[in-house]
Structures are given as C-alpha cells and as structure tokens.
Amino acid sequence: MSGIASLVPEKLLYDGKTIPAIGMGTFGSDHYTADQVAEAVRGGIQAGYRLFDCAACYGNEDKIGLVFEQAMKDGLVTREELFITTKVWNDMHGQGDVLLSCAKSLRDLKLDYVDLFFVHWPFPNYHAPFCDGDSRNPDSRPFSVEEFMTTWRQCERLVDMGLARYIGMSNMTIPKLEAVLPLCRIKPAAIEMELHPCFQQQELFDYCVNRGIQPIGYCPMGSPSRPERDKAEGDFVDMEMPEVMEIAKAHGVHPALICLKWAVQRGQIPIPFSVKEPQYTGNLACITQDPLTPEEMERLKHVDKNNRLVKGQVFLWEGAKGWEDLWDMDGTITK
Ligand SMILES: NC(=O)c1ccc[n+]([C@@H]2O[C@H](COP(=O)([O-])OP(=O)(O)OC[C@H]3O[C@@H](n4cnc5c(N)ncnc54)[C@H](OP(=O)(O)O)[C@@H]3O)[C@@H](O)[C@H]2O)c1
Image 1 (cartoon, protein in one colour):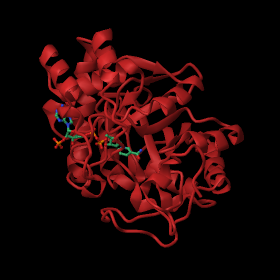
Image 2 (cartoon, protein in one colour; image 1 turned 45 degrees about the vertical axis):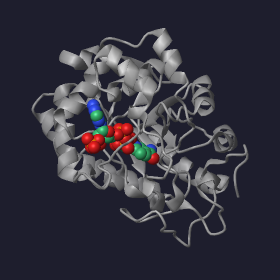
Image 3 (cartoon, rainbow, N blue to C red; image 1 turned 30 degrees about the vertical axis):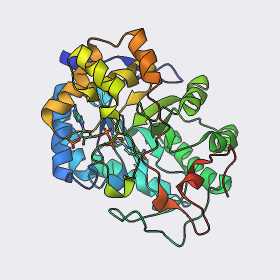
Image 4 (cartoon, rainbow, N blue to C red; image 1 turned 60 degrees about the horizontal axis):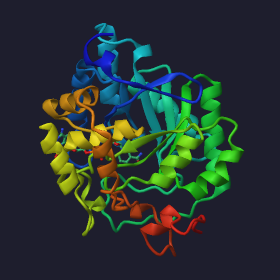
C-alpha cells in the first residue's frame, strides 16, 4: 500500500480486525448522477480511500461496481484492501427478501462478499426515491421488535453464508438497541448514524462505543447538498458555526476539514461525500496531518445544537405526531 492510503488510521472492530478511520459516501442526493458518483469512487480509490459506503437505494451500485472491478483489474487495489458496505432498503425487509437484496447488491457491485451489510432504516416503511417531504406511505407502521428481528436473522445468515463479513444497523436509537441487542446472535459491528458538530448524539455514541460497536457518522459536514425534503427552517449550518470557522482559520483550511478532523479524533468514522476531486482528496488528506488540539476538540463539543438534519418524516405511519416519533425522544420506543 502506498501514498495517503497507508497514512489513514484504522479502527478496530469487535473482533480485532480493522476498518479505515474515514470512508467515502456514495449518496448522490438529488443532485449528482450515478456516473458522477462512480467517477468520484474511481478518483477516490486513486486518492487513497479504501472504505466506500454504498446502499441499494442510492441507485448507483451497478456503476460503482464497474469501477471496483476495473480498479482491481488494473492492480490499483486488492479486494482485501477495500472495505465496502451496502444496505438493505426498507422495501426488502420481509422473509427471503434480505438475501435477494444482498445478492442484487453483490451482482451490481461485482463482489463475492461485502465487508459490512447494514439494515438502512429499522422500519419496513418504504418511500419512493426523490419523493417530496410530505409524501407518506399508507402501509407504514411503527417499529416492531419482531419485524426487525426477522430482518436481522436474515442478515445473520448472510454472515453464515460468507456473503457479508459483518452486519450493522443504521438510524437506531438507544431504546430500540436495548430491545434488539440481547436478541442478536451476531452483534452489529457498526451503527451508522447522523453525526456532525451540530448533532453529536453523545449518548448514542457512548452507548455504542461502550458495547464495542463502531459508530459511523453520516452527514459529517452537515450535508449542504442534502435533498430538499431534508431541509428545514432553523437548521444550523455546521461549516458556518463561528467556532468551526475560527478553528478553520487557525489551521488555514476550509471549515469542512475541521468537521472531519473532529470526527476522526472523536472516534467515529466519517463518510464524507463529494464528486469534486479537490474536495474529496482534501477530505481524506486532512485527517493524516495537523490534528486539532485538545482545546479545539473541547471547544467543538460546545457547538452541539442537537440539530438532526435527516429527520426521516417520509417514513412516518398513520397516526404518528411528527418526525420526533421516529427517534424515541422520551426514552421509550414510540408506538
Ligand atoms: N445511513 C443513512 O441513513 C445515511 C443518510 C445520509 C447519508 N448517508 C451516507 O453518508 C454520506 C455522507 O453524507 P452526506 O453526503 O449527506 O453529507 P456530507 O458528506 O456532510 O456533505 C456532502 C457535501 O458537502 C460538500 N463538501 C464535501 N467536501 C467538501 C469540502 N472539502 N469543502 C466544502 N464542501 C464540501 C459537498 O457539497 P457540494 O456538492 O455542494 O459541493 C458535498 O456534496 C452519504 O453520501 C451516504 O453514503 C447515510
């Protein structure tokens, strides 16, 4: 391994094996095409990214798979050096469907196995890609331990079959984890959650770390290009927070890079997205040099505004009061 890739720190998973401390996101949102994202993955491999966060619902795994295949053919990278994740979408939670979803992702990604297979959302509540924020599916229902475990058991079988090295959950809450973790035969290696300076989720973060579950942080820079349905009045802009801007000035870098340095030094794995070569190259390089001081890390703790950006309202069920119901705000699973 040469170049920046060899400088990127690694994190330990529960079994002592490693995962890169930063990865590249591949959700093109409503703005970037599958070809643009695949091209960024190609550039990302060249730049030294080894972890790629994919998902069936991003609609680009077939294009990204061609890039992985070519990169391995060209000897740029080996399969063992890559750490590739994918996720089952909400319409494929039913009995028998998870294996089909995994098989489709493997076919598209041109892989024999994925490194980490996530349950994308803990509900079977489906919404069409590119829907608007008010759209609701009449079949949506609240979280059910039984339904979730039906999905999770199938994920466990993917590990048994050698199709996934690890399995993980995403968009979970502590009450939901309390209910399902004791039932898991194979525990989640990682939990993907929204994490950025204005939304630090300290309690959930600590809960995972204390149980040997690695937090992976999405929207690490506050996702300025997120879909319109995920934009709400009053949302904070991480890269414009005075503390972030001042620390960026002191280091002579863009505020985006402060968000990423903070993430890696705190201990989550950020998965920044960009299709712009100078951005994604800089996003990776920044975590290998000029770390934040303990004082700066302490200052950034206070930037937290408990500002969730991906509120998930499109997954709500009939009778739900609002997006808060998805996140079990009162410490119990909202029914
Ligand atoms: N598990 C889940 O439910 C879930 C949910 C959301 C996201 N994710 C994953 O997390 C990944 C990252 O999240 P995200 O894409 O929403 O948010 P993000 O990484 O915080 O934001 C990406 C945007 O930030 C800007 N940016 C990137 N690098 C920059 C730099 N160096 N300087 C200035 N601006 C920069 C770019 O905006 P411009 O395009 O305007 O330049 C880019 O589109 C996704 O791609 C996806 O893989 C998972």
